[in-house]
Length: 240
Image 1 (tube, rainbow, N blue to C red):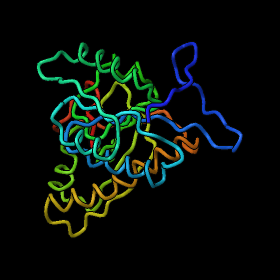
Image 2 (tube, rainbow, N blue to C red; image 1 turned 90 degrees about the horizontal axis):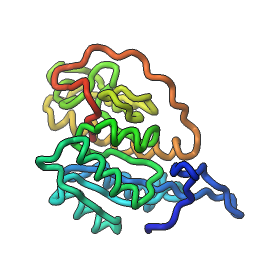
Image 3 (tube, one colour; image 1 turned 60 degrees about the horizontal axis):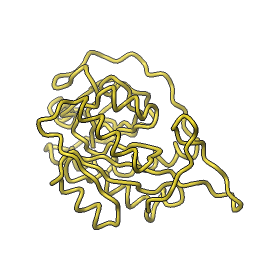
Image 4 (tube, rainbow, N blue to C red; image 1 turned 180 degrees about the vertical axis):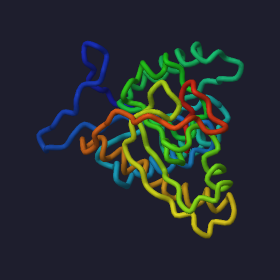
């Protein structure tokens, strides 16, 4: 699964190349998680037998927690795994080491799937324009953690799942796709989360497939509303 990838003189991956049978080189994904990794599972399934099957391959599943359940799940699904403990580490120093580890797998995209770390500029600049995150809210209305709790506590009839590129703000990167989640009749937080995750699991893979096929533009992000409770104006917290 770890195949070689053409690299430009600048160290960046070259554009997709057509082959004799008009197929394109599969894009290499580094999927980052900190917990059970339900979005990771959905992405791997999409790579193995779904919308990403002929478009991408999983280069590595990485975690900042060596005991994260998602690593064992990923290995059982046939994915290479790697980890580096972030406990007690300074953010920039740790991220520099993570960049070095991920660089060995030559990813085209870094896909955050429940990676519960605020990314430093060191990390973001290393993979600029190639980091994706999924956020369980409209990022123009709520940034940061506890988005499902926010929707439930405010008794919203609908929320939105957002897939966006990561920049140096908190959930401020260009939006690639959004999909509504009907919350009418969802009378528990668990039900809100269940409905939201069902959307997350298909939207992430579908959006990534469209991005690889060149079907998505990346507009300049619109001004955001003030940060909601539980968020931070520094860095990126990965959802999903």
